[in-house]
Image (cartoon, rainbow, N blue to C red; front, side):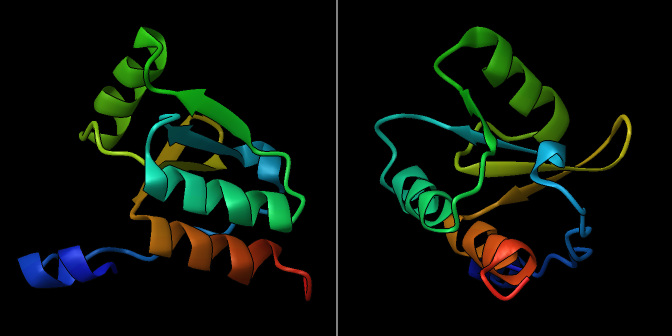
Length: 105
């Protein structure tokens, strides 16, 4: 749960764990400093995660339809084929990536 969710009083389910970065997609915008923070960690961990630039209408539409917000960064996690979990907030995304795909994994 991010700080923003806590402030809103939201009860979020934990992000599902997947066994491969092929089940992840990173929704971002080039000018977003929070996206850049996440991209630095993706590079540091040497992960090959598909990037979806929300300046492209089809990616923005997918983000809005699936995640319900246009906010970036967002990590789409696919625990089962066709089922998606949308993880927002750069700190939460970074923590997820480090925990599940960090050097000690």
